[in-house]
Length: 321
Ligand code: UDP
Ligand code: MG
Picture 1 (cartoon, rainbow, N blue to C red):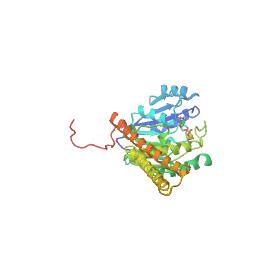
Picture 2 (cartoon, helix red, strand yellow; picture 1 turned 90 degrees about the vertical axis):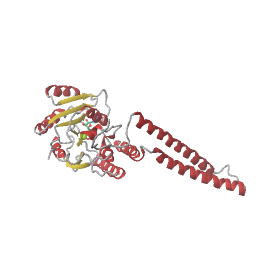
Picture 3 (tube, rainbow, N blue to C red; picture 1 turned 30 degrees about the horizontal axis):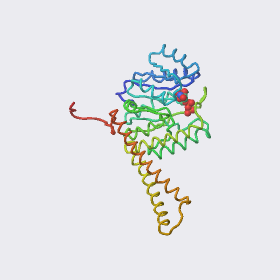
Picture 4 (cartoon, protein in one colour; picture 1 turned 45 degrees about the vertical axis):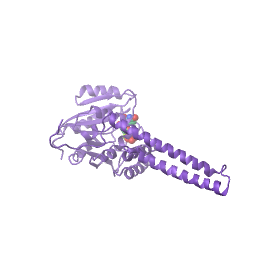
């Protein structure tokens, strides 16, 4: 059932050179949304398109009062486009989807059915209609990897069709190409995440903006996300443990070589092991130093912006001002 507290829905859609899809998309979206029992707004974010997308958005926004169209100055990428949309949305629930009609607007009510018991409902393109070798296979590996590393098991991290409660989005800052990691990051903050099967269509018009190179970026982003999850408030534990290990091995190697030199009178000047020992000690000290600098950065980050290291769900009782 669609919850009663849902008074207004915001739909955020990034568009980059989607001139051939916008009109049909808007028509289908409006068909679905106008039959729902709540108010809605559609936020189209033109991500620096160079085709007729801005002109079409101008037309649509002037004829439909439900539409807010943002135009970014240049192509900032899908994540930035989502972030821009989030900053402007006023709905109790926010739905994101692609603007190329690969996601089906008809699935929106299906997602909303679960928004009462969960805070984030993610679409799962079970029968995904993309090329196998360049898109589905890399994505299967990425989904497996992300689920394993982040501990948040989803079949389809890449699906843009998702529904979020307002507070999930408003407490989130997005960087780089991190929008696919929202469920993982959100779930670490205690947000309840679920997934729902959704339909997926092949891209009929316009070109996909991504290729195989995205896989490498996803892996790098995953490393960032994992690091932030585990060590963002205690970086010395990450850098320091490698640093200490490195120093200790370097020290043991140097001790061994010193022993051979002093007690057995051997020449050690030409031994590669000496180089390794010295290198390990230097790298170790640098890692510990990096950990300490990171510790200072963490304090600057949290204290200068009054960012807490916890998330409050609810406060009951009287609050003294
Ligand atoms: N998109 C965007 N900025 C970009 C790349 C893509 O706003 O730099 C939009 C694009 O217009 C589409 C959505 O993001 O609405 C998904 O892009 P695409 O269909 O190319 O990705 P795929 O479905 O192939 O993964
Ligand atoms: Mg697409």
